[in-house]
Each structure stands twice: as structure tokens, then as C-alpha cells.
Image (cartoon, rainbow, N blue to C red; front, side, top):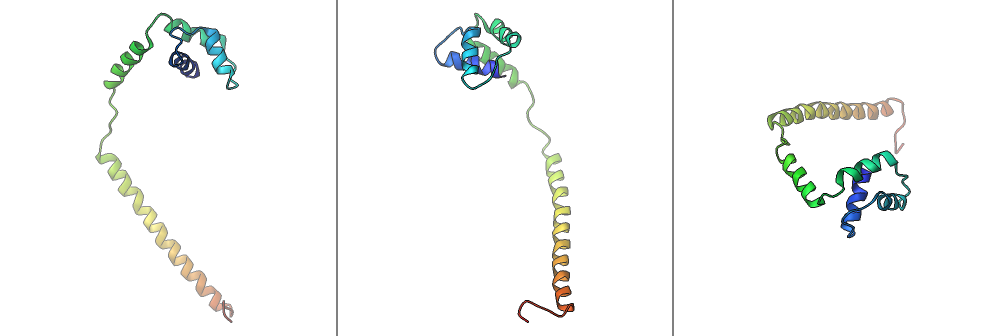
Length: 112
């Protein structure tokens, strides 16, 4: 992903056909050492192609991917998830009350 991002940065900077050296310079400027094999793969795959056309074809492929989920499932999960939390809060309140009572039983209080 970093190689593609560096390639896109080079294109955004005005270089329509970045070389491996250009991408190495971009990655090196932020302290990343480029792997030659991966770098060559990205450059060879994108060499001679218009980056805007590549991006648009990718977007059209993503448009067919379902991104939504069932509405009822998360709502049921959320309702089920809140019930135990409420029960825990009630238990905590009871604990706090019992702790206060234990101080009284020991014979000392805050203002004694």
C-alpha cells in the first residue's frame, strides 16, 4: 500500500510516469526503506497507464460490492448488549450502599 501511495503522491506532484527511483526518494524521505521486488511490481503494473482511468475502473468495481448489513441484526445486538450493562450498574449501586453501611458498623464515620 505504501508503494501505491508513494506512486500516487508522485503523480499528484506532476510526474505522470514515476520511476522506481522517484518512489524510493518519496519513501526514503519519511524513513521507509523500499523493497525492490514490491516496488518493481507496482511500477510495472502502473507503467504506461493513466492513473485516473485505473482509479475509476477500481471505483466501478467497488460499486458492485455490497456494503450494507441487515438493519435488524445490529439493532437486536445493541438492545441485547445494553441489558447486561444496566444490570451491572444496578449491582454496582447496591455494592456502594453496602460499603457505606459497613463503615457505620465499624463505629466510625466521616464526621465523627
